[in-house]
Length: 346
Ligand SMILES: [Zn+2]
View 1: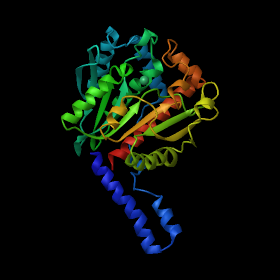
View 2 (view 1 turned 30 degrees about the horizontal axis):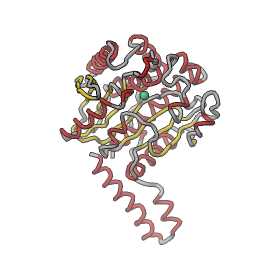
View 3 (view 1 turned 90 degrees about the horizontal axis):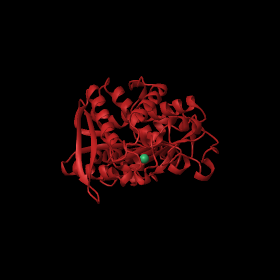
View 4 (view 1 turned 90 degrees about the vertical axis):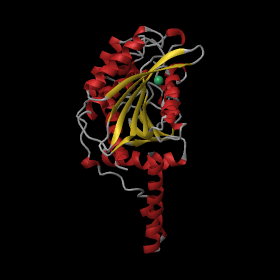
């Protein structure tokens, strides 16, 4: 439960500030210790994910080739949901496709919910979030490889990797429909979770991921809007990405300068409160802790955004080659993988 994590963190931070000041009496020492922040999990003890970017991008090709035109209301929308559900079930996740009637005019939306029970705190979820539909307006998008084939498909590999390891909390893979119709499924689903009293330790969002370091753009990591979100997320982002994975740090670049083909440097950005609007925002609105990964700072930095040419070959072109796309995808995967173990051990 995130509220207990926040309380724990508040106590730890307060202790870090007070104790050195009391012992040393020197402002310099106190500041130095305080900035060390809460004690975070030693990642040398975390299992390695054993999934490669090459494998994930091969999976992406498979997914968008099999299921183009995943617009809510079209047959492949349902077929994609059933495919994801079946695969997750095969990895040992307890899987249900939940249906909701929402929107005006009313429509059926589906949420693929796949849960692998935690060993110590099974009632608390670390939720992975993406949307399997493609944009409906005008029917322009065909494959939607980056938006959001990339996030949807990456979660297939979280399913594979988490199937082989134990976690304290439950891992919930949540694939949403109708994100492109106004986050409809995730809104209904977040209401449903709240009503049944589901504890959400964290919600991690993946929408448009993979075109970033070593490609000449950021792997941007955002967190929820509240000060408590920043207090928890910022030290974790640093611990995982810069201290442990040794990724290069940057500021995300201003959109105008980082727009393809003008990216200048591949890096990871601890990018502050989430400026991207996707399903995880419905979790943030419930007061649950959220983080979000993206490759490139804004959706419009990607020149295939909501276009018929949003395909894997086009993603490769934007990333500067297949290898860059595979490695950027693997880096994003690792960043979120290790973040999960830090959160799970708080
Ligand atoms: Zn999207």
